Length: 68
Image 1 (tube, one colour):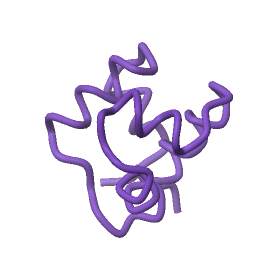
Image 2: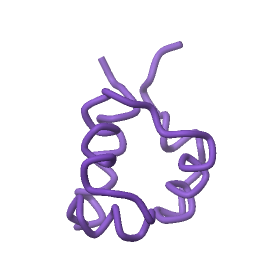
Image 3: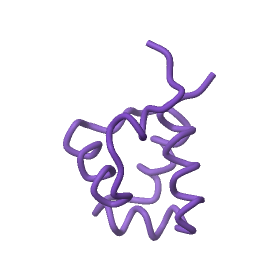
């Protein structure tokens, strides 16, 4: 099953960014990024918008493959 966490991790790796680097760009902690990627916590709408900016992607691209 494709999840937001899976997509986020894939995007980060495609962009050759460590969790630490991504956390710094997001102004959050590496632990929080890990929680998002493991689907323990969903990012807030504010953070989703920041994710879209960091990767220059659309919401559809971020949620690609996810089921309702």
